[in-house]
Structures are given as C-alpha cells and as structure tokens.
Length: 280
Image (cartoon, rainbow, N blue to C red; front, side, top):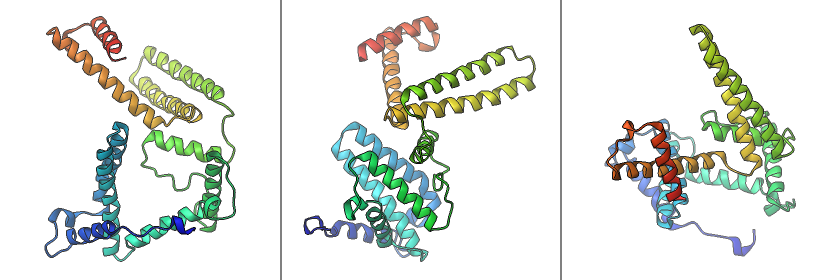
C-alpha cells in the first residue's frame, strides 16, 4: 500500500470501545445492555440498517451520520459480547474484514486486472468459490446465503450466484417473456379457484397459487436484476409513493368531510386519480 493511502486509527473509535466496555461492566454498567445477547440484538441491528437506508433516501446528511453511528454501535456491541465469551474481539473483526478486502481485490492490492465493475464482481465470485473450496465446506454456489434474508434480496443473491457461473438469461426481453408466462400460470390457477366446488379442492388450489405466485415474484426479481434495479429498493419506493398518494386521498376526502369507508370504489378511484395528478 502506498504511503498516501495509509491511515491511522481514529481516537473516537477507541473511545467508543471503552464506552461499550463500561456499559457492559457488571459493576456500574447499564442494566439493559447487560441483559443483551447476540440473539436479542438482531431486531435492533435490522432496524438500524433500515434506518440507515431511510436516511440515505432522505438525503439528510446529518441523519445519515447519526444512523451510521447507530449501526456501528451494533457491530461494537456484538464484538464486545464475543470478547466477553473469549471468542474474538473488535480488533479481530476489523482484521478479518481487512484481510478479506485485500484478498478479494487483487486488482487493487495485487497483480490482477479488472477494467470495469462487471469484471470486479465476476472476479469477486470466483475468489469466494475458491475460498469455500479451500475451506472444505459447502462448495455450492448457494453456500452462505442467509436463510432469513428478505425474500426479494434472497432471490437476488440466488440469481447472482447462478449468473456468476453462466446460468442466466441472455437479456431482459427473455426474462420479460418468463414473467408473462408465470403470470399466465397464476391466472389459470386463480380461474380454477373460482369454480372449485369443495373446500379440499380450494385448499389444494390455494397452495398451487402460492407456488405460482412465488415463481412469478422470482421472475420479477430476475427482470429487475437484468434492468440493473434492486427489487427491494424499487418496492420500497413504490410503497412510499403509494402511501404518499393515499394520504392525499385522505386529505381530499377530509376537505370535503367525506368518510373514506363510506365512499363507493368509483368515488375512491376518482380521488386517487386526483391525488396522482396533484402529486405528479
């Protein structure tokens, strides 16, 4: 590494580690922090990660800084718990990721070449496959994909792993055709459900509908990937847009002293279209 890239440890990082140690001190520490375990922290970690994403989407620089700090504290907390159990400490966590980054960026820290981001990702996956093989663990392309990832993100990871070994659609048009095919299959099952006569038959069809809906969603994620769109981000944007518009529907109805629940669907649709025009 060249001299101009060398950095020194920030004193505030050491301060944070000392604060964490004080919070976990059985003599005078924080009762809440002392009760926590790695498992109990999981919901807070997920919440902090989503709050970082929300702050970034908002563009609020101060909020991003604060939320990144909250997320960093989660890492420090886990490392402290591991240190107390004698497994590893924060320095070893930092060393592990530093070593991994150097190992997986041979085009920066070694003699390999990568001319664009696509080549970097291909090289990254090749290195990960070799690491799994060297460790004599699960060598499947699906090894280490977390089972509790949100469905859209898990589907994206699965598809990327397959694409890295050449099992992928050639273009978005082919995926779009697959989406239409899966939508047709959902339609067939829904139509069959409408005419099903027995509860047993309805239950069987409902299970098939769920299966076909999963295939449809998987295909849509594939389409998003080929369109270079993160499906989780896209759905999040759609959720926010819908709520924004519906809040406007609520405001329009309130301005006319109309109860939404008392309006026919045709009137709600008119309010919806007005809201879309006003917020476009």
